[in-house]
Image (cartoon, rainbow, N blue to C red; front, top):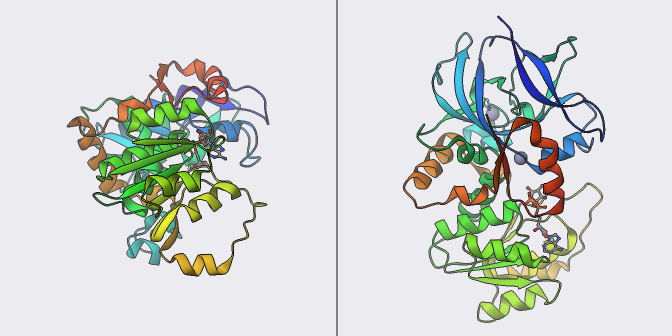
Amino acid sequence: MAQQVRGVVARGKGSPVSLETIIVPDPGPGEALVRIQACGVCHTDLHYREGGINDDFPFLLGHEAAGVVESVGEGVADVAPGDFVILNWRAVCGQCRACRRGRPWYCFDTHNAEQKMTLLDGTELSPALGIGAFAEKTLVHAGQCTKVDPTVSPAVAGLLGCGVMAGIGAAINTGNVGRGDSVAVIGCGGVGDAAIVGARLAGAAKIIAVDIDDRKLETAKRMGATHTVNSKATDPVEAIRGLTGGNGADVVIEAVGRPETYRQAFYARDLAGTVVLVGVPTPEMQLELPLLDVFGRGGALKSSWYGDCLPSRDFPMLIDLHLQGRLDLGAFVTETIALDDVEKAFDRMRSGDVLRSVVVF
Ligand code: APR
Ligand code: ZN
Ligand code: ZN
């Protein structure tokens, strides 16, 4: 039987979100009903609310979530009721060329739940990133669920569903940071800070944090940066080279998404170094570079999609490291809030002094 639960809905472009009663159907074939225990507030939710992603209002917001599977539909074998899971944006097919080559984030045939959750009047909801987890329960494709150690705090676990995984994965998966490497991270918001944590986990010797905001650089230091550069005051390329014996960093991670920071990342890498692009540019942005510099410095220019992660491999591994005290995912949780405080959390996010507000149920 379909259930009624409370959820945070964005009804129209720019209007404040509202806490509403929503109807969640029983899981159909391949689907899972998840009782949400925690869900982080991410910039992408704010983008949805402001109409910056698409116009498919009303949205059921929330997508960085963990919870317990309540029931599953026909044919679901990988998760069962009672399992503690982290949700990800889409189930991958496992069959296409991208999946077969171990790059599921480029999968050509991804899935979310087929059935729609609705408002009381029957209006279909668009779940943010195919999840919609600012709700007591949500319906997803079972392949969006990854089981992890249930002794972890849900508020911490949910973070791996989005920005924190993107940043850690940019360092350990895409950048392939190695022991003793020098790493520069340009842009120290949630994603950049997670890249710093990833670089530290991988054994980087030098981790240079670059930002235009001194408060962000303070946080970056707490996350494990060994050096900080305020790029408003100092040329970051010169500073990074200066801190690496005149060479540049082995791996430079760009976590802003602007032409000038792409350029800085490009020139701050050592000969044969790697540039990892995590910051997402807008369609209008262009960058002109001398081809001889592209050619002459060698190395690799890579973009990182969701940290190039394999949820089934990376989620349980990172949760285990956290539980062992070797990775402090708790450092990303600035505050825990109630479901009806999401709008206020958006305000605090805009002011820039919160890493993550996490709704706990
Ligand atoms: N140089 C250096 N840092 C900058 C600059 C700049 N020119 N402009 C902005 N920043 C810093 C901000 O001060 C902030 O600390 O970049 C950081 C961006 O952080 P957030 O806004 O918190 O964004 P975050 O969630 O970390 O995402 C960063 O990664 O996944 C993508 O879409 C996401 O493009 C976004 C990027
Ligand atoms: Zn997110
Ligand atoms: Zn696929």
